[in-house]
Image (cartoon, rainbow, N blue to C red):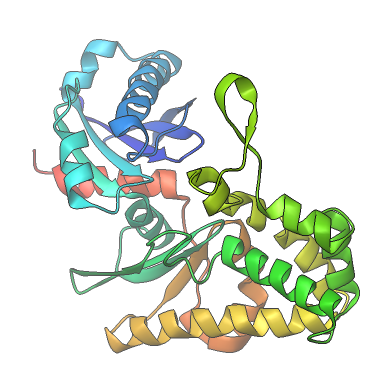
Amino acid sequence: MPKYFLGVDGGGTNCRIRLADENLVTLADASGGRSNLQIDNGDPAWHSIAEGTREVFAKAGVDFAETANTYACFGMAGGRLPSARDAFAARDWPFAGVQVHDDIDIARAGAHGGEDGAVIIVGTGSAAVAMVDGVRHQCGGWGFHIGDQMSGAILGRELARRAVEAADGLVPGSALTVAVIECLGGTLDAVMDWSFPKAAGPAGVANNRVDNPATLLGRAPAEYGALIPLFFEYFEKGDPVAAELMQLELSYIDNYVAWFKQRGARKMAAVGGFGTRLYPLLIARYGDFIVHPRHEPLHGAVILARQKFASA
């Protein structure tokens, strides 16, 4: 009787699904919609994976009834809390076995081929995890408002603040800070207006009351993270403010590298769009402690499925 492994890389915007045979040879990939476990109690994630599973079996030419011989591993955005993972695993799935992980676990498994090692996710958000002699160590990943120090969203917010301070004459500016002001509206008044989006009230009327949560929270993390390509453009030109902020970014990563090494990790990979662009600086700073990922997170989910259910 054949055995199959199914991996899911579930993100806040979309998810990817991979079906593999018992030797981890990919049979087909499929995609689905948003998959954060914290959105609507995980209902959109369930629908995305359910529909994507049908698609991936059809693409592979495997009868859907073979889900009964398929073992699945989901790496899910919003899966930081054990209660959320357990509740999602307990849903009505057609598989022979299901394990739900935080999305950083499949990133680590993919980066190191299922072996020991550390990984940092550096994208719009950030987090870190390591496996050392079978022991899992995790830190960060607490979100934009109280964590995510290494993230593009936090650096983008710092860049916007620095641009405003420079325009006020409080600190030295640069071509980058001027470009940021232009990008966000051209004047400080426009930048301030941008920072507090107009939330729609009844009948679509703009609502900026002080008790409106969207107004109080301001722009979303991804909107600050959208400044990172501009940041890199000027960093590569030698802009002094960009260089200063890059040192701030690397100082945050220093903390995680030290934390990993204290726990015995011997290698670290970086994933995420921001993290990938940092590789030349990371290698120069940390030497052979830095390794390139061996596989993508989606394949990491398949690896974890086999590790968990190989003897089933």
